[in-house]
Amino acid sequence: MRTPAREATNAVLFVLLPLLMSFIPLRFSEQHYTASNNVKITVLGTSNIHDWDLVSEKGNCTMTVQQDAAGNISGMTNLQFTLSVNSLKSKHGSTMDNNAYKAMNASSYPNVTFKSSSVTVKPGAGNVYTVSAPGKLTISSGSRDVTLAGTCKVNPDKSVTITGSYKLKTTDYNVKPISIMLGAIKTGPDVTIEYSLTAKPQ
Image (cartoon, rainbow, N blue to C red):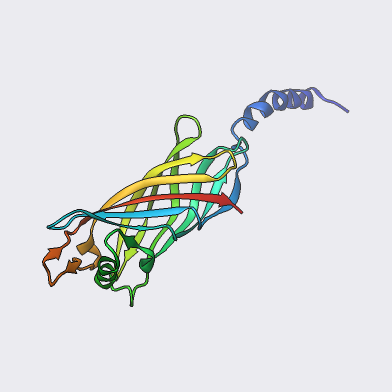
């Protein structure tokens, strides 16, 4: 039996329900992404003689990507990146490479790693986002809390390409200057790391 009070309650619910639903966030999905074959790390530095660089294309990266119902990226978590020190190669041959490995104490610390539990993602124009990843960067025996920033582009195949750069001092990570020819050539402590990777959904 309907009563005036029940009819009034139903009328209020009928009006308020759509409004309440509008405050419920869209459902987000999470997907695991990996990058292994589409990675490039370039270390740019200087010395008392000439500039130099070390390049690797053998890094590995994993992350979890959050997307809303429309496919827009809303965030990233559990980002982990690993690079083998011995995969870094220069244009100046094995002498430069081996001295770089020695300076980084690669025999005891064979990998460069970066770990971030949560990455902030801000949308930009088109399918390009700005990303900011606070985390821990470990090189040789040194670890630092850093924030790596860059851009993230969503490709037609749903893969994401992340690019950026970061400047650091090798002395902050207990990395000695690279010394060649009995110290005649010695590197400076300031280097720039450029990174580019394409991660695909699994």
